[in-house]
Length: 339
Ligand code: DAH
Image (cartoon, rainbow, N blue to C red):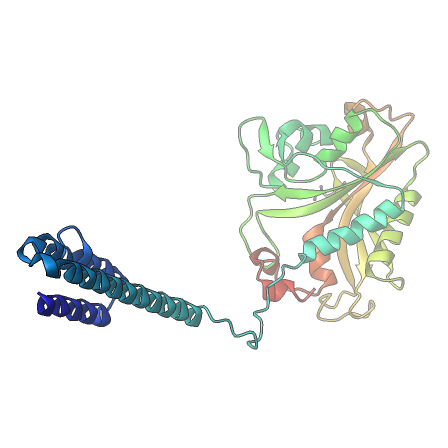
């Protein structure tokens, strides 16, 4: 019996020692110490032992059990230590490695240019207002003196949603909304997105931005228009900038003009940038047509006004000497970061 016991003990200790994983330990515990385990079965066969030897054998079984349990605990602790160490090794952080630089976004040239334009006009007492991009034909054309079948309608290839609703082709539509409010005088600019069914190339896009301007008050003259827009050009492109007004035609203004600025590359001498002209066209403008005032409920005998429309992309392209409008829509951070 003694021999059998010490064999069981040796066997158990060996199995524990050579077990390769934590889960195995539990199997070994059950195999030796469980209800049907080997050591337990020795106790069960105690009746075969002579009564005087029983306490001795009993004590030996208890000692064997204690040894096996101790060994199991020891091994378990060793396994746990190993797992912990492996985990620490895997999670090690090298604090001496250089950090990874986070890429930070950048303001778009359009945004930078718009903020400059807004700053100039706010400084002159203008309000910045917004209007809807989805618009009634009435606001985009009709109320701006462009009735159905007017040739100007064909000049701006329009995205129609239905007979009466469209994507605005010009921010001039906001003029009408402002005039309809009936609060006079008006001194506002309105930046926003416009849409035209154009193909994409270096100077065209089906969606771009304009900044509309409108002033309505008593005793406004063409001199006010000229003075305001000259001041705008000087603040935007530099004090030395000169302006020139050429007669033009817009249905909603009379008289109408386009304004050119002296090329800020060559100062007006003529270079590749201004195609040898010395002048660059930057906006359309004019005195608000009496019929336009009337349609929006303003008495043209009492009030007069001027209006202008600037292409925002055009300003950004000129100011930052970008030669392809598509760059403004691709939003490549390497491009944007340069402004
Ligand atoms: N809406 C015109 C366009 O898209 C630009 C324009 C010209 C606006 C003259 C005006 C203006 O307010 O007076 O081409």
